[in-house]
Image (cartoon, rainbow, N blue to C red; front, side, top):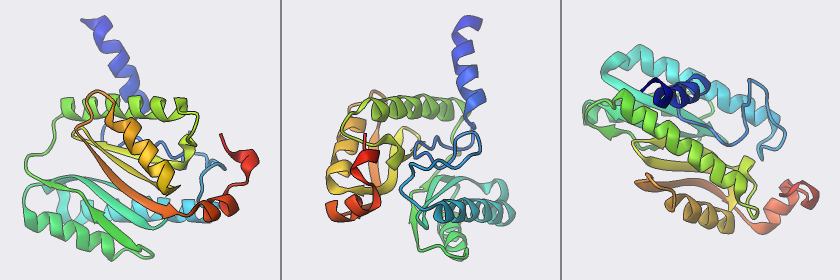
Length: 202
């Protein structure tokens, strides 16, 4: 039994049990990664938005909700659970009032707070998604942020329609994935070419 639990314990020690896995490369060991398609300034701003929003949610809604906050290019994604619709809508209002937030995508589910086993399963799925994107030769894995909640995979990032479609297609085929939610900022191929020189592509 102990041998079976060790891999999960190691995984959970590397990834927060409360926070979803981020695969976009914005933070690795606390350091900004240059391959992110956002500027360094925008990466820092997104981190600030996440911190401020999380603190305000904790202060105003306390343990009535379990909500994760992810920001990508000032688009805030809320995932998790709220005990009623009023708290879900209140969470959206709180996030929208944080400085520099451009848009809020509210994917919070109304119902029971997720269990530890459910969150552990999400970590396993997130690890599979990360590995799949890294293995995909036609995608730049650092362009994607991945948030997993109750088996539902939320995809964020600044990507082309081709990349968005390809990523969603790959993720749908991963065992355990219940649903794929696209929260992308779509770029044209020309915009991407200006953003990422060919020599930096996978």
